[in-house]
Length: 226
Image (cartoon, rainbow, N blue to C red):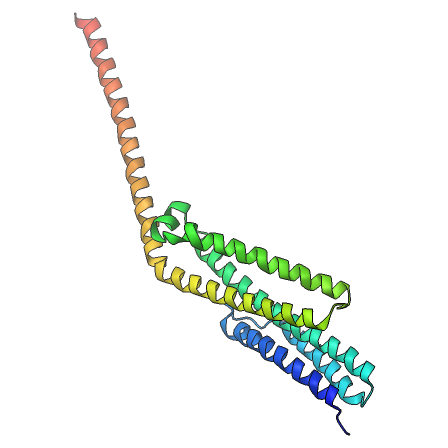
């Protein structure tokens, strides 16, 4: 089968997007904190392959080549988006799970940067990924009826942001692992101080009762003998 230039051009365009999506999937497979296998990105890649094979079988039909190219591009892009999004969610959940047993004072004393920089940045990343997810769903509903150049540019920006977000969250996970002993120590100290305070309060209460009883007894004896 002879392959026309347009077919090669479309394959090259898919290749560039595939490389970025594949990188996201590899990162997800190797660095998700739960060590799970996620099916969604793999299904998107499988669907993309179906479209590519239809491109191959279309021969010189430019309309079919373009339609199948768009379908393949859509699935490859969603595979990358899904992988990056799952990776960011995995890291965010890991941070939340690690810190859930500690009080705000434990965290702020043991990991001073958390509330000042880390938590606000996590919220920012969650908001931005939600924005990209909304765009993705909107495109899906509109059946990708947008200009190719605009799609490619947005893909590039989205992948850049997702990768930066992943690297940022990954650095926070490493920092958290470093500061955990300090946070644990702060929790231990807080609980020890609280226990001492409770013990002191109990002692004062008991002391007050004893004093009251003694005063009462002395008062009674004074009325009887004097």
